[in-house]
Image 1: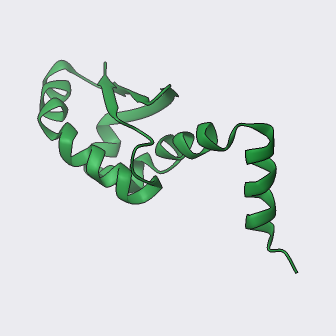
Image 2: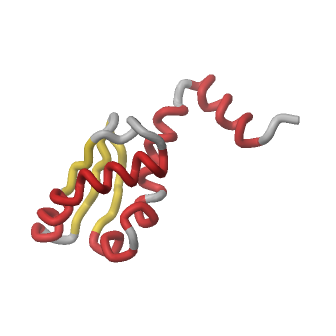
Length: 91
């Protein structure tokens, strides 16, 4: 018996969109990845190629997030897989 997850994965791969779906998981899991404090100040909106685009409530928070980018990228890689998201654009 084939599990639904494996069947879905094979279907996505056959359609050529598995990698894009994997990358979109960064948006879906954003609050879990950054925690409640940062999730209140940010919204992960979309992924373009390997860059996650994140809206931030203010310039001071944007500056803070720039300093945290490396750690956030590491957490994203741990959650959705290495090499899927390689940069974050905060705006």
